[in-house]
Length: 360
Image 1 (spheres, helix red, strand yellow):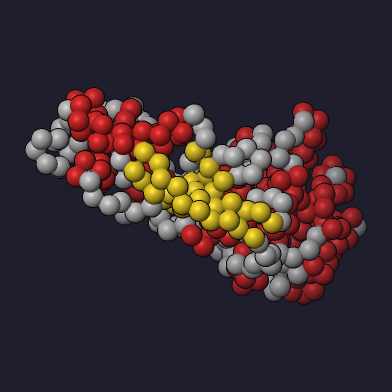
Image 2: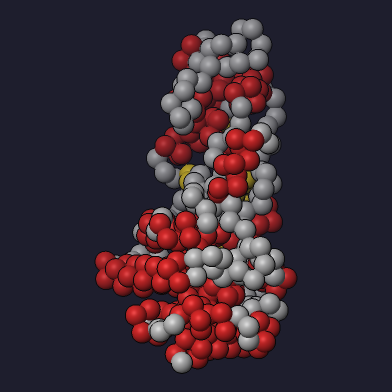
């Protein structure tokens, strides 16, 4: 990684304090599923058409198209030579019958870009580093027989469909266990993929709050792995549903985001006002290192303090900084934000302690 890339990486990645219980929670699987799996053979022309028509959905989270031209060209050359290409994995949504890409998005994007003649950024897609007869040619510059060979090449797809329970919850496990292309997806990236109502745009709007980014997160750009988005959801979910909280935290957040999938204007205005007032207070009063005991943000301090502020009302808390500092010196509170941070009793206890301190 060169110096410029490292600077961009540092600006886009939030440092969270490592808490063992948080990591364990994210790896917990408590559900059982009934899944149908079947194979399907698609021509490349049909796959590209389904992408254009929105029937095949390629997730748009952090992972951009990353293949260099030569690698993309080699894939197209494999089709032209009739060589086997690894199958793709798709998940069929029950309600829409759309197909979500679990594994194979780089291959599918390459196919779609080549048939269109250009990449997603608008640059021309000409084959490079392939056999002379195809080198430096776009799709529409190939011989008719070669275009037909590409159009009619059969790519195998392994399709998954959940039959029980009657939702799409298993896609989280499928993404986690079967995604083989590069870095394994985290929970928020998967949520962002399968929960596609207007909540996504709303969360992105909140995530651009200047005080949130510059003072609390200390990062100019959105986190590449959506840790900032998950932090917003965590605060919101515990604010509204903490009395009904149960482990694991990851499922609690997923269920909350599903519930809030399509927000009306009043809901958005109400939470935006709360969020803005909270981050304004924090940035004004504890701008040095908010929500930190060590190097990174402690999410348990963050969620309890944010919920406490919103519960009491940011304009009703006097001497906020003094009370915050006293809270961080309370042994019982420190235990609740350092160990077993997703346990039901400790989640509720640390929020209650924070509320009690700021009410005084």
